[in-house]
Image 1: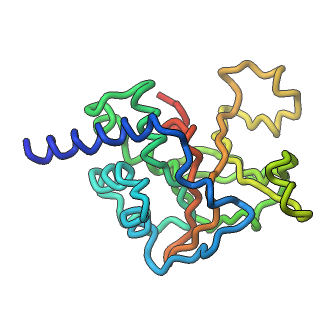
Image 2: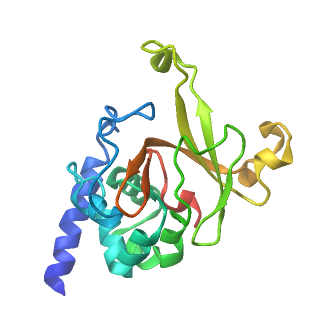
Length: 216
């Protein structure tokens, strides 16, 4: 057990160092298309063998909680990078608390039954419940910034994920600045979407994401 603990410590120390670097691992993969979105393996095996090793900690958490089959049974998985987990640890966690307080239910909030792709979503609200029982709102947002429009005349969309707090901000129908900060839905963009495995679809959350959407 001591050897395993030391191994985890070294891995997590490396993650914390890596997480200090710029968030650039997926900049060559954008939501307007990736070279080959299909991978001939299960979702779990994709996360385990991804060539940049961006999901080592997520896989460790999945293994620790015995959730491999649940991950492969999910139609849609929101994947969390090592950068993101390292960011969460610097803000709120220690190594011990990461493994103690990351529960099956917290990881189930990144798993969804239906297969959801960027193309299948409406630009309007798309409310869906996670396998952890929490409500999410998935948005396909049109990008109008120069970096998205300079090379194409076609519309470019990004996937944005909202973890709903109470009532959906969009259902309330009032300006966001009229909603108290602690009652606003929490959101992150997806940095790479529509990775199609043999068991479902994977969307990779941006490295700015906090584990569990920063819910304690």
